Image (cartoon, rainbow, N blue to C red; front, side, top):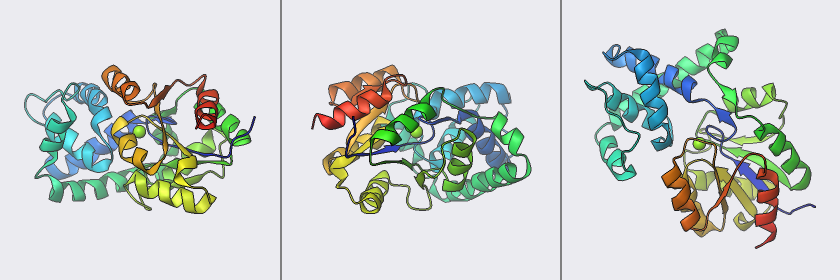
Length: 253
Ligand SMILES: [Mg+2]
């Protein structure tokens, strides 16, 4: 079975379980700007994990840290996305500074303490294997992420997935731009791109472009988001059957 599709993967929450690494970088960047939050770090890490599904990029980590630094810290897990967006209002100027510091902390730790950096994160079991299977049968695979491309490439190398084109934050923070870049690079219309994401909000704007959306059921989303995805015609896939689902749903169009 082969398919004339390109399969793009979101990185954090799909290929990589990096929430604790993101928390550590966010905590350090926040502390540089505002001092350490008053609540215990372990408690903040727990709340950050629960809120992770709301975040689309580093900017949103600032919003989460701002909420967690209130006394008592705000639990964002069940907050509607619209309220989260409202919380983001007015934080732009500081967030930009924070994001630069966040990526600088990451760059330093990746460079100076690679083992320590790796210990904060891990691949989702089985996903690299599914990527390899898809790569054998599709026109290609790519990564579309708001992370820096170099970090994603370094992490992919550790699980033996090499020479995958990574479209990172350097290209754009907008996944529609990533899809257009993939379309150009692989010479396929966007209707031949399958995108595996863990955040429904990132998939919905791509559907009018014809991109075939697949929501990862193992990532940083909630049961409510998975149910909403299915009601909107988005394929919800699990790791063991990912390659089959992706190749089948693309053949059906
Ligand atoms: Mg993600």
